[in-house]
Length: 540
Image: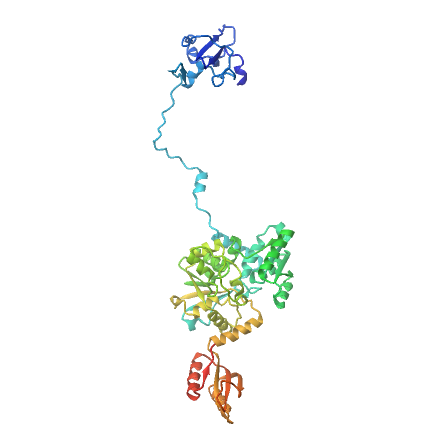
């Protein structure tokens, strides 16, 4: 278009100071080329040439103006053409309006209601709510994948404790996995979902927990290089177990936090993937397969009791599966009273990363080593019907019940569900069909022995008392004969003649005894109190 302005038929110049306009017109012959673009609207309609009588005075033909000064290039559109744009000219203070030859534009209604616009496919997509973090389709896909990779369904059997507590209890025995923990489901599905290049590079985990053990075992099975960073205080049997799986074990740091930081450093330096137990959709989908199996194995189910602790992955995954299949089934979470992370988060309506408390980490281990994630909290808030906390004493007694009635050794996490029942915190489940998830059974032997001994004391099966006997031959034999007639097992006895608490010419005797149950305990207490006024039962 720039070339079309080189030879206009009419050249106009405007002198702003004098407000004068002058033009020279070139006539066209029939033989000459004629460009209608340079004509005004009147000329195209056959009118005569424009009249320039509206101005007077000399004309500056070649002058150029800029802000009223002869300095810049003239406009590319002549003033006569401005009529086509409906423009106004201000000449000598008078306003002269040119009539436009083009059709008028439709009048704009500023306050008019806009017409409804049909929504496009993009707007429809944007209007949809955000997708859920964990879908039932993800859990179903995880169940199919795990079945192909070798994870078998664990049994959900009727418990011998059902009649004792007045409800039909079905135990989902996740402790029967190779590593003794339900974390195998999430760890295996997480490892099998990795890209091949990442599987070739390897993965790294830190601290001694059920998740690390599951990753170590299944990574070796999938031929993925795996490294385990463990604190220096870890027991030799646990270290040996990881090495037997085929993992490369490195002892580093005096705390679990030191091991985690070192694992992250090695992952950055060597290209490993540092796996930590979190609330990712893949990991939760693997754990959610427990809910699918429970629904298939126990018909007419009324409630499911699941351990809650740490990142609450097992609770939220199971709840997502159960609530999709049957929303009327209650999902109840149980966590230790010493570390009520989920309960406090629900009270404050936001996930709490850490609690300012000092739980027994050796006893609870996985239940207190992890923080609650945002996605897991939102799922628990939406799908979990009830969350309760149980005391340490109830958890230890529940472990004892498993050994006596189910012939199974479980850890505190696996005993959480049964602990809530025997503590009497779920009276609404009387006479109903209840499934209890027994999540794990990983506990060192020395700790198991300590827990059993403590549980016997808490269950009033082992007691200790002191009594003062006269320093005469035969008094000790009479006490032992009384205990034998009541069918009481004597575990330990201590005879102190020289004691600051004993009276003159008397000896203090301390006994540790084991009884059948609480009924026998109460009966023996009454009998000994009647016989020996100085009897004193020691606190548990």
